[in-house]
Image 1: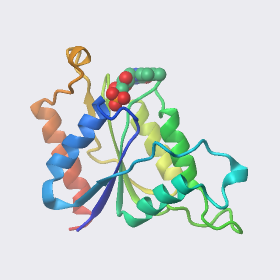
Image 2 (image 1 turned 90 degrees about the horizontal axis):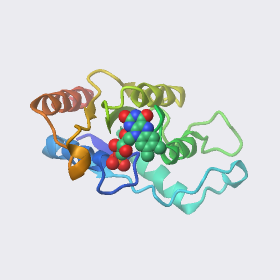
Image 3 (image 1 turned 180 degrees about the vertical axis):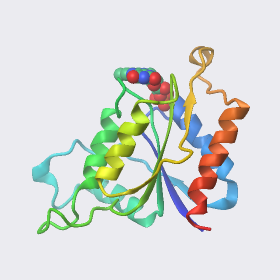
Image 4 (image 1 turned 45 degrees about the vertical axis):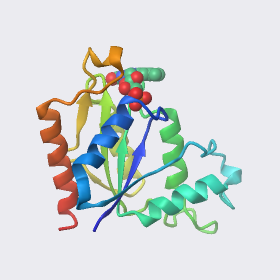
Length: 182
Ligand SMILES: Cc1cc2nc3c(=O)[nH]c(=O)nc-3n(C[C@H](O)[C@H](O)[C@H](O)COP(=O)(O)O)c2cc1C
């Protein structure tokens, strides 16, 4: 059974992206082993502090290494990747071998995919993050990747509503990812 590690690009544990992440887990059901990465203690990247890696970095790297799929669910900030998530991917992109800067990273070769809950479904941030994930040598699944728009009424309630079409697309995305393990 595939092991999927979910990463929320937002640290708002009640936010729209957390709700989207929870919905994806609900729709995956028992079809995969799913866990969620806690990355809130990862420090800002400093090149002189890479070896040995800070404990919080070593911990998230191990969880990424243990997974088959890394599924990012992220907000869009100014058409871009949120700063905290970019910092996390910088740590994950680095070689684990102090003697070889081109060596394998924790995320090297992993299957990755991106979803977003943003005003228009993250139409700008998703390709930016997908490009970054390709650049750091992961296998990015773009086919059927999902953006869920935050509907105008959702801003007042804080509750992300899913249309039937949203659910259909999320199921298609999940199917595309799980097909890699059929
Ligand atoms: C600094 C900042 C920049 C933002 N820029 C965008 C943007 O470019 N496009 C967009 O759709 N939403 C933008 N938003 C709105 C976020 O998408 C929205 O706040 C997001 O859904 C929050 O996700 P969360 O509830 O999971 O934290 C921005 C929000 C912030 C705080």
